[in-house]
Image (cartoon, rainbow, N blue to C red):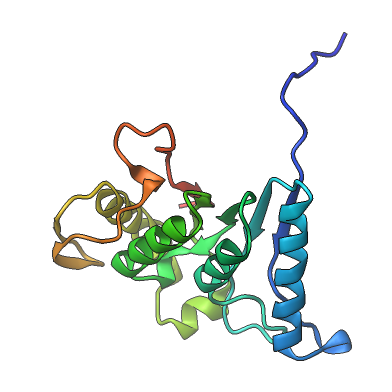
Length: 191
């Protein structure tokens, strides 16, 4: 006999804001209508909305998901907002920690930060990041982000990053010590 679960069924949405050539419309319309749909989902009990990042795509795949997450946060009250995933090798960890903390504050603590290592060769070439370094860069950036979100005044030097006396504000409940909301950053992909 199969096991039964008492966990409720969740309804999530996933968006990448693509605008492919055969059906292309103005990006203003694509973003506006998608944000309207997410606001509707929030009002109708959907649980989560996930955003995905890629760069330099012909179809406009969302290259900058944290501003989108902030727009969603400002238009909704209940739905959780997450990145699935941000490509960490292409981001400055201080800036990412600050932006994630800001989105978390705007959302009232509804933000989830998910990161990955990336895989598209063209993105690595355009950002001048050797693909072979993606795992180590991601691991180091995660350590920096965790420590900054923990409230640490951070000085850090490695092969990939040099940080001097960085302490971010606003504080984020993403990593608030002792909080029930304290959670691990999600790291997706192979290192």
